[in-house]
Image 1: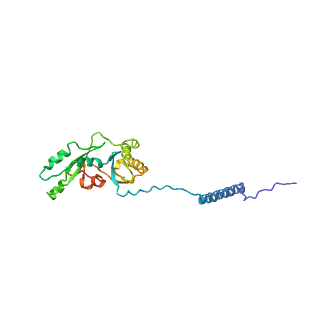
Image 2 (image 1 turned 90 degrees about the vertical axis):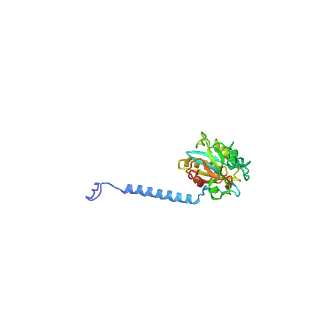
Image 3 (image 1 turned 180 degrees about the vertical axis):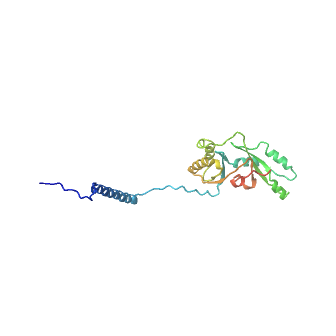
Length: 229
């Protein structure tokens, strides 16, 4: 006659052998997946795109882009300065104030700025026989720059369309409120092949730059404070 064996008093009511078998199988499957993934990653090839700054073309000119108050404005002074000094002649005995009045009678402008001629007063004080000229740049009232949503179709797009990246590069003057629009504008410029650079900006118009420095206009470092009158 068969009699069911009685469990010993110290034996556990739960049998964990089946649970341990399941856990062992799961661990084995996980180890297999990890090893397979490592082998696949080791044999895979990747293409990584890393943006690198372009070198400025040799003998190229700089074009300044003012990026402040969340907008972008190109300050390309090449043609306005050429127009401003085209008829400039200094003759001994001629009243300099009259020369300036003649030069500034119809000052050249672009979409955002007006350009006027002035005497470098500091140079005149240092040496009365030396006559050096400054260019004063004034904002045109009511003419605002491109917002981040206008960069592809606005004046910034028109400016880039007139430039050749082989002969011009872009320098951005950026204030703290315009980092987002600056990054977008820089991406557009670099996407068209332009070398770029940027500098911090805390600007108050009008700004001045030395006419003898060429037609590149002011630099961000040269317009960090209001010009002396």
